[in-house]
Length: 159
Image (cartoon, rainbow, N blue to C red; front, side, top):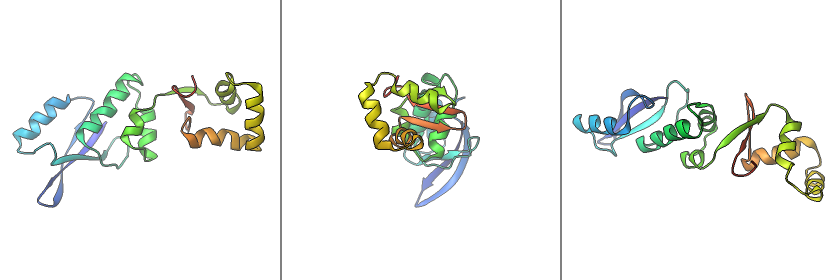
């Protein structure tokens, strides 16, 4: 999680450094910035070098993502990177917890629909008209992520 840090002063922004967010506590970074004469509002993250993601966020938001990676995903940054590359807001990333289900669409739909009444399942497939549209409906709602690793589901909505 190598952040590209920029500073903003006098209407201009300039590159300051690259910072390993996973290595240093937020308090250490803030103290160091104050030592160098930068206030909290004058520096920001403009992307992550190792993830090949360009996005602007505050230092606070970057550390929230760190907490999500460490707390929800046991150090695996895959879902956070996937979401950032798909232009999700940090607030959306931190408010969802995704869990890997399968690489197979049939197993995915079985897992999602296993608690539903049969009449609801029939009505859902009737409205969807086909299998692809049925799966896509869950992807568009954000309940399912279709990633290169397979399908992940939002724990709060499905499991």
